[in-house]
Length: 286
Image (cartoon, rainbow, N blue to C red; front, top):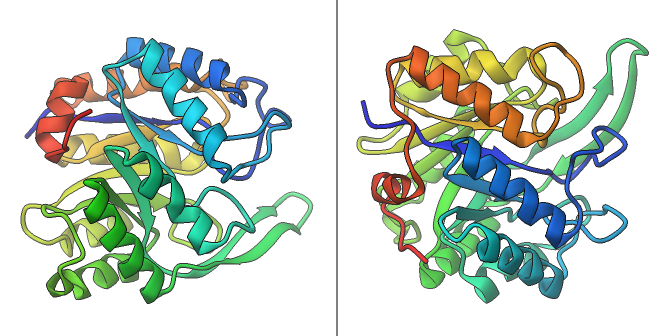
């Protein structure tokens, strides 16, 4: 098996410092957190930029400032920009950072779905909405990523997302080989079990690479372990889970990267450096 690539997803598009004060907002906070994650063993950072109040932002100047601050402090790291960004962002705003900044990687969500947050203890729906990712958006974003030289990371929340990507392979919109991110634990998508993971893995096209993230403590580490022992890669970070192994607030995404490094070693896999990750994923480089 190839070396294992570890991604740190630092913020997401929903919760902020009210959930964990170590979630970064400013370009300087992002730069500091990314450097800690790189020192801990990650090769890729997945970024949803925030404004000073902590709200997800599609403002190009703020995104550029954040990316430049990250690269200035940690030039080795691979930046993976989100094209989901946050609630209420238009399709044109979602793809604009890729067109303008041309990052090495960007997320590309593969299907529309119910998307929410539920308080199971109170039996209350906290966040309720539709995450829109139409076929037209999927192919339009894909073409623009290809023009920018940006590798899409296909965010798949179920088997349908993978099939959607494969359906459009002969439309000449994707950069091959394909790379997927299995997302488990979002309310509206699949929860992690070994069987749901193996179902997702079983339909991947030949030559594809994949990474796995689990949202929430029940999903994060089991999903990472399963991926590590079956040839996949790992994503951790405060976007997905704000707690540590002791169910206390994590000190940062870097702390979860340390857990992921341990998982790789237990699985008998070395951790990929950014240079090695670029080679495995066939990225264009800086």
